[in-house]
Image 1 (tube, rainbow, N blue to C red):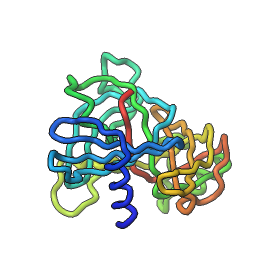
Image 2: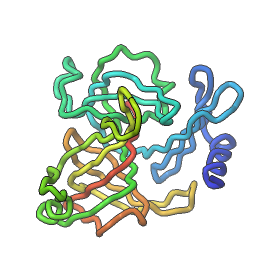
Image 3: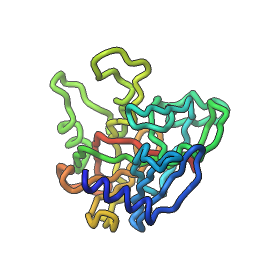
Length: 236
């Protein structure tokens, strides 16, 4: 908690202030691509802290509806990935939810609408595999079922809590894909190193980041990765 408060104070003091409706955003950005977005109200009370990684990837998605859920600390969108025809934004490979750290700067959108989005996955758990055979063995479920090597499972849309909830809209996903590029980067805001990868999955390419302690195996460019993580995205 002390580290979170320190970063929040740093965002207030040194972050870029961006007016947004009834409050403000304070954007703290690092040369590594790491970002922290703090949203405050008119009384300068913290409403939301959202991490993001600013990468070079992009996906064409169909925005279906906006989501603002204070209980789950989410400002974002439900969308369809892999949209090929912008005139049909709800015809894609799968639906998913992403948190949008600058949500209240986007303005009013006529939805549904196709947009270019830069997506980042913050991996809470990450496994690395040298090839597809190792991936199949490493991700096989007890019942014998497994995942496609390039697949995206929007677990945030599945009912996993006690009690009624409709719709269930957390920006969480299992992302499986081919590792196209990677690097170790240093976040000067936290003075900690982190791993970054450019990953091709079903629906397009995204940026994936993880702390070294969450990675099982050694990521190999051209190999495969499987991660469970928080999904963030910004409209381009």
